[in-house]
Amino acid sequence: MKGRKPAIAAGGTFFGLFTFSQLYQHVLFQKITPPSERADNASFVGSSQSWLDRKVCNWFGFCGLAHLNQAHWVSKDEAEPQTVKIDLDAFAKDAHALPEDWSETELGDREIPQYVLDHAPLIHLYSGEEFWPGDMDDHLYHTTPHLNYTPLQAVDDHPTLDNLDHLNDWGRFVYLTSDDNPEERPPPEWLAGEINIPNIPDDPDEEAPEEGSRLDGHFEEDKEAEKSDWFFSGVGDTKDRGGIRPTGPVSSSVPVPTKTPEGEEFVEDKYWRPELSRRRLDLRGRKVVGGKSDAPAVLIVVPKDDGVVDAFWFFFYSFNKGNSVFNVVFGNHVGDWEHTTVRFQHGVPKAIFFSEHSFGEAYTWEAVEKSGKRPVGFSATGSHAMYATPGVHPYILPGGILHDMTDRGPLWDPTLNYYSYTYDYRRDYLQPSNLTPDVPWKWFYFWGHWGDKFYPLSDPRQYRFLGQYHYVNGPLGPRFKNLGRQHICQGNDECILKKWIGDKRKGRAQMKRWPDLGQGEEMSGEDVLRFVGPEREFA
Image (tube, rainbow, N blue to C red; front, side, top):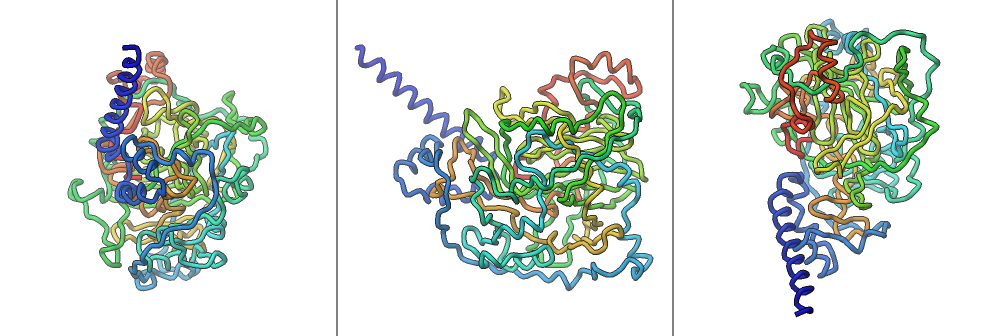
């Protein structure tokens, strides 16, 4: 009898774990995993040379248990090349012509309004960051294009920002694969990006922040904004309010800038560099002055109907550091694109969006913290997800098991070093702007991923627990971030516009302080903690 109880308990545990794993893999896994990873699941599991590993992976969702303490390169599987041609010269103008040679019409099409720069975001990077902003040129120099797992060029034959689009001849499954092992610690210099830490500017003059720049209070939806003509302006998708999908002047096989898959990101709060914490916002009244990074940001200005203009500020990093759950790291990937979007109407800022992994949060312009006219955002450690406040930001899993961390680390002013463009989303047509007419632009049309393809289970660096990978796909570029979006949120589904940031417990006092913002119905933190809308694969 005594021997039966442990056996029954073990059997019950085995059955319960098996049942939970099957439910997770066949229900939840299908919802939160990008299509690119779901489609490759069978080949991913089959790549393991261990029969036991394959069975444990299928039965319990624990894949690659033997890999947890290993990290080295392995040989890659063969893949058949695909050929899809694209000829940008057939429809693109000469991007290197001097502005004085432009016609009046072309100048108007390529002009960046001054109000875009006046209201450009300032970004606090995390003081303990391990992977800082990356330079796209440097990234290309240290990567080799692969078709899935097969190299397309010699290691010393690197693409450039001016010819990256030539890789489209191989189709959509090209990955810029790292020439170095991203598991190395300390990481290679180009992955870490320490040379791109924003410098410390001279001490700013004393200046009080504008009224309302620090708002603390509960989240409240701004449903009145949905009635405004600036809330919906753009192509959306085929279901949205009769908008048209951009076709572009090339074949219909060209991926349009709407919903597209990429790897999920997680973040690990582990490293801390106290010497950088002094680069922070002075809340006692001094205006914030951001520093210059040697890694250029990317500004893409997208005019829309009804006087609406969306200004997309993209930030590139060569590596995304994943989050640790019970000391197991998930969500690493080479290459990382994040962005902040400011929506204007007739030159007046109306709302702002911060990208967070494959979703994000949108706020009214009045809600967010500012330095002068400029909004202040916060980049999370490792994942570089964007937030409106410093602190801990739980997501996906309950209990804060997965969370991002932001603080007032080095302040990055992207207007000090950037590539700027204007974009016609109806024609899928990008042009260098009047502010930076000589910058490269063909890289924008690269169809592939800016990092490695998620490693197969046969790779000792890879494992997967309950649908979450140690290494996931590198991301697609800015062209695939739904630049023609109707509302300011990333996806084309529900968009919640929030009026306040901060602690809900302070909400009542703050409503008395700023009565013009409206009081509205009080919502719980859980109701509005996360953006409601696009699935994970809409990154």
